[in-house]
Length: 424
Image 1 (cartoon, rainbow, N blue to C red):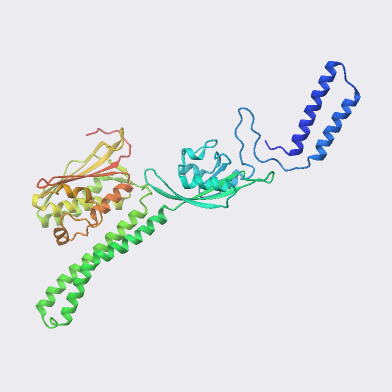
Image 2 (cartoon, rainbow, N blue to C red):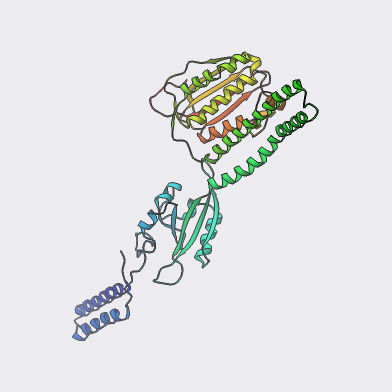
């Protein structure tokens, strides 16, 4: 309810006059001069209080809501902002927020202190500074959740025309996560590409100089060198493709995929695709019986990349075992009690991995056996790509291995609950 200063003064004068008249009547001391005096007091109130502007906010009574700034920032205006907007009063209490702010901070509600939910010292200090008369400012902070976000809050003062001073502040929040990831991606791409491309480029330059010099007329050397140069060029092409794929995945890491993928059919498709490679390496790929309708929320192309990388690695690096076992099943989600996951396991029976290498296998360009990896065409990015895709799908990657006993790679993804199925 919005009241002007004149209205409040008139009501106060009328109430006081009524009280005086009632007291005079009860005491038998009423006289017409008292009525004239009450009338004059109301006229004086109307004359002295000419402010027709409504007082901003609501008068707080016992049990009523706290003073708000709705008169300063119309609700319709806040709802039109695409970015999250939060209005805070002088005490740090949230008095207004738009739908975008509710989506970003689901626990943030009106009439509660902002500090209960947004525990960022830079933001809280900025609010205090602006309330004490400071100019508008920006505060960058991080929001920790399933995925860490980088946010920046523009803190602007709010003041009413009814009185001097600051009534509160308005925070306009922007998500800088994608921009920050893009900056890191560019820096990492330059550093990694320059390091990994140096060797094949040096090899190509050396062979080209040899062919231009002493081996200019040596046909056998030329044929041998061209084969090596082709392999080096392909290695650079694979490296660039993997770097670009990893960069794209990292850029969208904070955005969960919204598609629907059936994992059983996807795994069968990859096994059929890699059948020629398995035959060439003398490896048998065995797929256990898969239950139908094993659906997950995901990006089909990215999940294809995960399955292809894991099975291809098992064929190449577990070749000595002569066999790769693949399974897809429903099992309890280790990270989420009470929920089920679609679990894909790829097991090889090769030489296995030493324990000291296991924690670092998913790092970029980390290789347990550098010479063997490069000989088999590895870029050192395959498992890093798998890890980032699984993280984007809110899943889990586990690697179990002992030297001489092969390796097991397990990917767990949240299951879409369509029909109830038996948990194996």
